Image 1 (cartoon, rainbow, N blue to C red):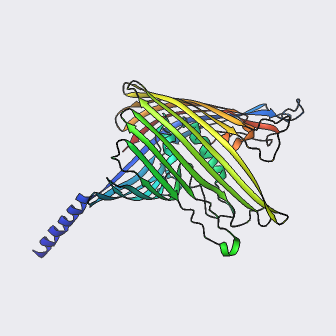
Image 2: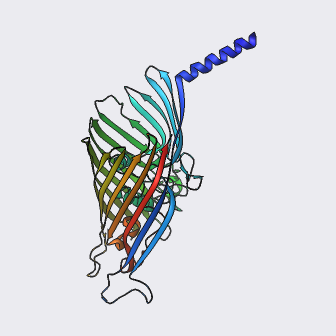
Length: 439
């Protein structure tokens, strides 16, 4: 009798708990056969117009790859999310989501690397969110990209700005273990964040602010001002009503900062600071028969270095600029959807103290991309798709690591000559043929 009463009490408590909270398992499995090609070409910015590739070397180099890839319509993932009603309009929730690679059965670079957050939210006050999350500027690149920010047709703005963040944000000996906007972090996501989201009942207005702690140890009593490498802050504000959606976003990352420890190769007392500031404005309008998309974006790569000179710090600054634009559309066709976009990114080089030469006066670079895709929905959860994209790079020798955008894959450009004479990125193509299933 006592056991029966205890069992009933336990079931009542469990039923009460389940009524107040819930946990959902969700995910995506997306696999495709993809083909990637890149082409590098010989260039000559010297005074010798007859300088040719070394004997036996071609004027252009092509590299290609055929791969079974993942995540070209939606990134393959596995996640858990849930929430609890705390009463009085207050709720707690969590979200744990990690990448999986169904092409080889492995998981992503770390557990729950896509998102790992815990939140407190109120319908009237908004949401406070802590953990690893997407950056505000990422959302415009994805929401206003007709091809969804993944696959061979991914926005060129997204690709170039991610390259910039990765190149500038790699971990250094001066900041071991701190990877800001590179490695585990990127232009898309950042860790150690404190975020706030506006409540959903503001007449179509939505927005967020986000701050990421750099978490470096303060050694000011030993080595001077501590590094701020890893710090990020940004925000997004938008309006959505009926067919219209428009939003503006800004983000700033201290991608590199060596003020705590003198970088290798620089004299004692030298310092180096690198900030990436990005902003974008995106919009879409759904006419029913066609949905139009547009985005303009800009990023500033600001570098400031100082070295001791005659007992005083000598400061030098350099501010490179990246300007991007996208126009595109989606067109429903029966159970399917046609998606296409044209994108362009221009790099404007700030030479600093360097002066242009008669044979290398142009220090800028640009890239264009055209992408088209068709998605055929077999059901609400399952779809077949095909995507094709082509990229053209101009003056790629001036910034091959960042402006040398590819259509994904492992095939990389051949970049040599340091802007004088050698091989430079010229063009790339990508093709995806796949299936996506969501659950």
